Length: 231
Image (cartoon, rainbow, N blue to C red):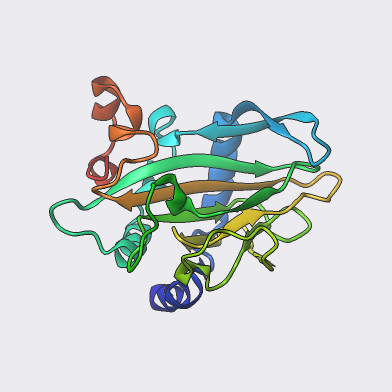
């Protein structure tokens, strides 16, 4: 499975690892999502404020997702994408909840690598993944991607054609950090589209939440060794 996913990422800038986790694991992670999510303000497609249960910097605020963030299969894929040099390695950059509810405003196309002032060339600065807790489809505001855009160097065109990602709960979407992506509008009446997001950066780049994801010494001690080496 990993080889075919990496092939798709090399060619298209993204890949889907089907059934990365089984149903029971996803049910447990879904419960932990609801336990740890907090109210945050977002905007609807009509420009109105909406309160949505979400979460930021989970590596600092919760220990419930460490096993996923340091899953050897995920780490192996990230190492293949980023090809970190031994001196610097790679770092955990950001971890969050995604929760697209009915009416939420679409996310514009963007590159994750654009958090840095210079566009990466041969290799991306970052690699990103979304673990589906609910079904992904165009109707629920699925992630949208522009296949092949990881090979482009020009500025993002918001009118570029995209495809909506379809996934089942337990599937994992992995993105090269140069790939143009966003998400659509959730047009359903009562379905949410939740995911757990984790992305890494090459070790010589500044992580999204700073060194050790902003943890204090006391917080850092509680992190398992498998994840600590990426902080």
